[in-house]
Length: 199
Image (cartoon, rainbow, N blue to C red):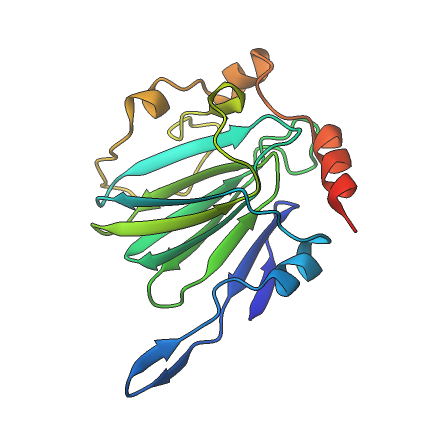
């Protein structure tokens, strides 16, 4: 498994080694030791999610209050998505920076997002399926969003796509509004929380 650290601190890309023969293929899409080596601690699993999206569906940008936040390990076993990691941590040296990784059923990459990071994705094909391993369960009162079409985010979205958003994501505040409302995680708080998880 190849590991690549992304520009946003606390985000990593994992590319598995695929073993193919006449029967099909086999791969290890999650390895706790490789993840722990990259992030400095094991990932505690509290919930596993799966979403299936039509082409043009744009979900996010979602994030949770820290502590405890919600770390995610995301992969796309079917179809293809453009997956976005957005640094929404106030005070971070990369605040507002976005990383984009194509997740699909060919390379079968995965992305890890640390607590406090924003997550979004665009489905590039019908029936694109995303699976998420999450460090905490869903907690509606602690989860927030930013409108993914906010120009300040500058997500590298393709031209000519009629994006399909949920009502909730459409009504979500801009990055500036979320900051004004005190919704965004604090960089130092996130760092201290993640460091407390280290062995």
